[in-house]
Image (tube, one colour):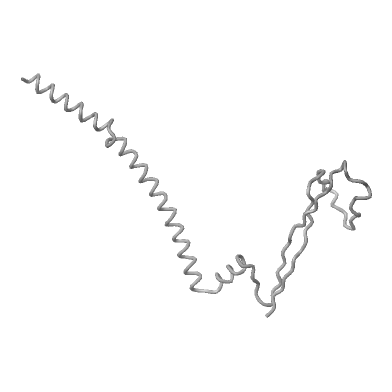
Length: 139
C-alpha cells in the first residue's frame, strides 16, 4: 500500500510541476505580465512628464503675457510695434557645369572678392548667397 501512495504522490507532483513550468498559465505568463507591467510603467512615466510640461505651459499662458508674446513671435511670425524684423534668407544660385559653360555665359565678376581661404565650389554645386528680408511693425 505504501508503494501505491508514494506512486500517486509522485504522479501528482509531476502533474503540478508540469502546470507550473510548461502550461500557458504558469511561469511564462508571469514573466510576460512582468514585462508588460514594466513597459506600462515606462509609458506612464513619459506621459506624466508630458502632462507636467503641458500643465506648466497652461499655467504660464494663464498668468502672463510673456508666453503669449513668445508664441505669437515663434509660431505666427508677429512683431511688436516699433520693432524691425530681419531674416536672413539663403539665395540658391545653381552654377552651370564647367564643360557646357561658355565664356560669354559666365557670370559677371563680383565686386566682393572671396576670402583667400575659401575653396571654389564643386562643378554643378549650388552657391548660396544670403539676402536679408526686413519687416517693420506699425501701429
